Image (cartoon, rainbow, N blue to C red):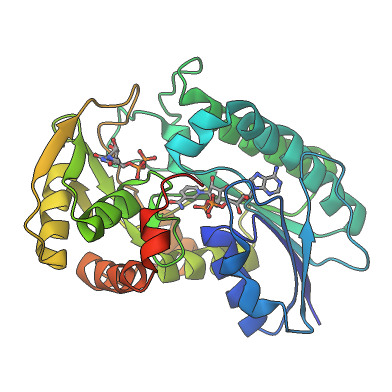
Length: 319
Ligand code: NAD
Ligand code: UDP
């Protein structure tokens, strides 16, 4: 039986990855320190013999018993309000955490895939962003802690690949959404949905002309799965190229939720990227992958999830 370690297992993407690898017949070890994650996302797995959970901080020396075929390193705060609140932990999990997991991969002779991000492109001057673009990141801005942690993560991963011959994969993940996002994590989809469900106005930052391209979680997981099993070690963009301005997106959400709230404007956070759209030519050619779930279908599924949450969860503001 193949054995896989998934860090960030109690988070949004990590928990869906645990489900996927359990469904594929793997023995899954989930690891998480619960700093932004929630055990509720994986509690349904605790009864399974092929799943075990380590409550652990990966910035400390990491070890797991037995053979280990694969590692997926997904531990890291991922939402701007999270990483602005815990900037040093964010830098540490991208740097020290990644170093520890690369060391573990070497020790166990495992293949490792790391979760990088479209944030390595910063506020991009090239559009859409292909993997060849080097990016435009402000290293010293508040947001830089996340971007630079991820850029360092890519560099050290390539160094282990080149210097130690380690089997490595790098997924550059673009904005992904779906069930199990934390309602109060500040990212735009849970923010707007929470506001719609609580009867509050939708807060658009800036004038709302900035764009994003949203990928439904099932598509993202399929892309990551294929990348892990591929033999390609350079970074691959995984995201949905369907791009939309945030203001237009807020209007779509008002339509979807059938609420009569208004849109209100708030200041644009520092260094908030103006545009973002993945060029997924590589993913198409190398992985035979492209997204299948369109925004209206994905958003309906996500809204159904948020609607099913209790009133208490809906009102909870802080993690
Ligand atoms: P999330 O916050 O839901 O999950 C991250 C998980 O990592 C949490 O459960 C958290 O408790 C855990 N964690 C953080 N620091 C840790 C540490 N030191 N030790 C152990 N566990 C730790 O976020 P997510 O959206 O699921 O993102 C997962 C990964 O994917 C992150 O690496 C993120 O940078 C990357 N990513 C996500 C997106 C997206 O749109 N969701 C986009 C680009 C990249
Ligand atoms: N945003 C917004 N209102 C909110 C939350 C976010 O207008 O209540 C904007 C934010 O400024 C950004 C976009 O939505 O331009 C996506 O933000 P998110 O935090 O989801 O992701 P990221 O900026 O990391 O892509």
